[in-house]
Image (cartoon, rainbow, N blue to C red; front, side, top):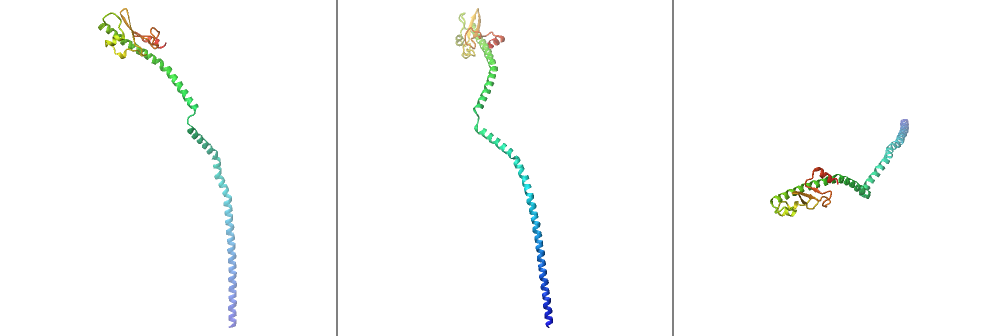
Length: 213
């Protein structure tokens, strides 16, 4: 009986020893595996950190390259806003006025001669109307051989009282010479007997001559 108990005790010690050895071996293996895993993680992190600056550098460089262009655009935009806010300067106004004066001067040089010629032609037509009225008065209403006046024509209703003035605002003058009736306008200078007088019998060449004076 004692021998059996000794045998059982010996077996228990052997099993306990084996269990202890197995536990120590397993712990050692787990420690080695954990160490290897930590080392691998460290290597990966070091590689990532080594690559990260290169990527950030690539991302930053284009921003630095475009920075002067952005600054230039911003400066131009500010200048445009400032120009719009300040309005028109005195120099710009003077330039516009000078341009308008040149255009007006050129237009005057072209338009004024034509306007003067048109007035002369109108005076010739008006003188012709007055002459017809005077001839009609002499044939129908005259009591003697005296030359009629503008007032005679108006009072006899041979002409409208609003059509007795020339284009320059002076009444036409009726002249009777040897039975012939002529009507004269004093012209632009409004002086009788001057070179620019306009007559009812003017030809186109006469009108051009007076317009060129």
